[in-house]
Amino acid sequence: MACGRFAPSPSGRMHLGNLWSCLLAWLSARSAGGSMVLRLEDLDTDRCRPEYCDQVMRDLEWLGLDWDNEPVYQSRRTEIYAEYFHRLEQAGLIYPCYCTRAERLAASAPHRSDGVSVYDGRCRRLTPQERAKLSASRRPAWRIAVPACSISFADLCQGPYKEQLDRDCGDFILRRSDGVYAYQLAVVVDDALMGVDQVVRGRDLLDSTPRQIWLNETLGFSIPEYAHIPLLLAADGRRLAKRDRDMELGQIQSLYTAPELVGRLAHLAGLIPEYAPVAPAQLIPLFSWNKVVKDDLFVCAQEGTFGL
Ligand code: GLU
Ligand code: ZN
Image 1 (cartoon, rainbow, N blue to C red):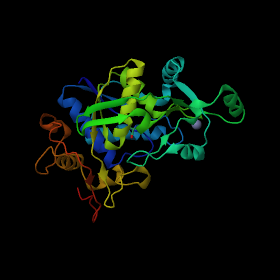
Image 2 (cartoon, rainbow, N blue to C red; image 1 turned 30 degrees about the vertical axis):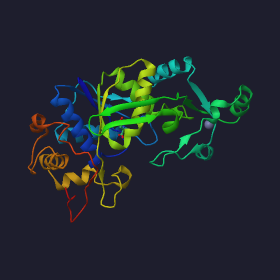
Image 3 (cartoon, rainbow, N blue to C red; image 1 turned 90 degrees about the horizontal axis):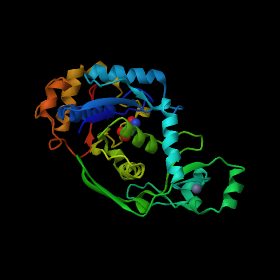
Image 4 (cartoon, rainbow, N blue to C red; image 1 turned 120 degrees about the horizontal axis):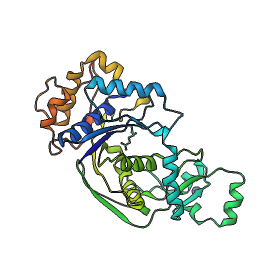
């Protein structure tokens, strides 16, 4: 590999799960002699704020993680996404979906094991007259029509993974009805144009990967390697989330120094047999995907510590 990435969404202060992803992504890239880019995924302007972007950078620096080149802001790249969206449109793959949220739910078969429903493609079959009629009263979202094909890949952390695109994923949204380009398009275009050839992120995004691989192929990009790391779970089994202000960095910093936190995360990951405070750079020679744990981990808050 030559280039990895940090891709945080600046929708709040980073929490422990974000730091965990950033640390492992950085170690994977640096241990292979790769560079690291920082991309702020701030397309959702309702939730993202410029001050959170600055905070993300300060927090990464606090932890001891660095990156190469200037940070990239997705909110400044709309024209680039528009260009690739247009290419897919020219290829006849994009169609308007007029379904409301309620209709979308009704129009989907709950197919996947994770309970995520698959859109049944009803707006793909609308006649031009029906489209004209609907467009008078509704602003559509834009979907891409997926073929009946199976996508498989070998994840560096989770092993082999496979999906039948039409059955397990369905036609997915590339542009929202408010005009915002979807994460699925932006992430594929950006990783390709930024030269990212290794994607390290949480296991919750494993099932987005087949559609991203297919988009890469469709746009003529080469396909990065992927590592989907275990999630950190709260004591009740919930995934850590920003909205709960769960283990966000402000709190963590009052309990641990950066080397203490990095040492605990490295021990949790399986990179060091005993806990010891450590700087990220000291872990570079110790990093290997063979060592990294595969199953989700419980990190519980107890008596002013995080049970790390
Ligand atoms: N911005 C996404 C997040 O913070 C990560 C997307 C990705 O790594 O592909 O959850
Ligand atoms: Zn629809």
